[in-house]
Image (tube, rainbow, N blue to C red; front, side, top):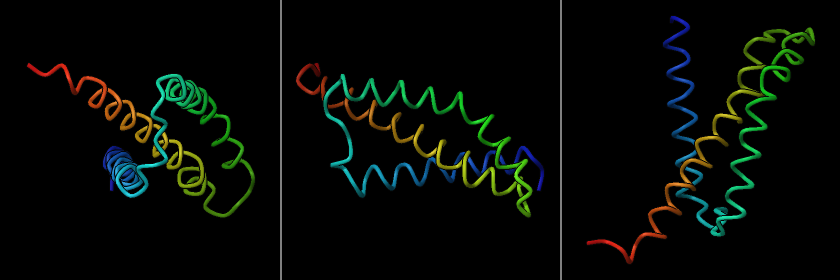
Length: 101
């Protein structure tokens, strides 16, 4: 499997998990725009901290440290990113419900 194929599979898998969480636990979504913007800012900060965190895990000497850093750091971050994106879309859909032409 090439690196590109693995990255696509990782992204699709994390998006599927995020959509499952979105559908399975609808009460997790913050319905206030202010709270959702806080989640968005936190998501951006977490993305900026992924590279150093993956370097810490990869340099720890754990067997298969590369896979551990991908599945312990990158995968949860991607799931959170996709979940916040789904929440933004849901909030936009529900806020414009009365304005359909």
